[in-house]
Length: 230
Image (cartoon, rainbow, N blue to C red; front, top):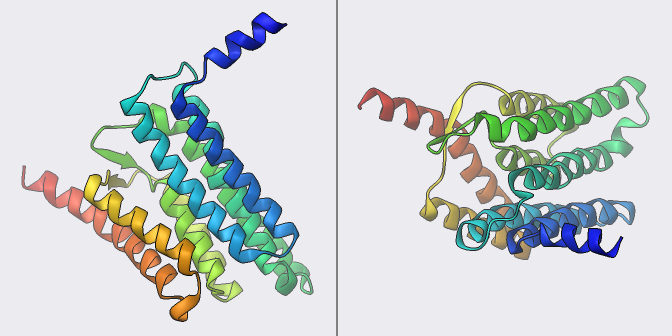
């Protein structure tokens, strides 16, 4: 048994440890919801997204573990699938609880996001390309969904957006892979959002949301024009 445990531990690389931090942030996000801390829950999801990006950087600069890409997909399932779906459900549960059809609508929408996110994550390494993403990245979808929910977008406006974003994750639309400069800007915006939250009239989450929406709408156009001009 001791030898088995040692062999399992040896499968982990430093990048895998960062991936485990991603899992923990997703778990912490959900635990915060049980005590009514919406702000901390939102922040932990954003921190999980940062950890998700960091593990890739660490993996490229250190020894690659044998668990690798599939381990990352399992971790992302917690922080980018389960935690955001639970966040939306808890955030709007009180509003929908008094109306059975609203409650069913809320549960169905959150479940759809989770299921399509799992499909997206499971197929990512099969469909991956070094130049683009096939389908909307789960991290971008998560930021859109949880930021809109955190900002208190009305229930009946938010859920259709979640449905569209969920379908976008498994569609065949191509999105560009951000370079180091764009990733750095995204990281700064996420950090500022975690620090300031709704301070200054919620400007930090709004700027983060705007940046992601620009990527969502302009990214495929950029790829199309680039391919057209080649």
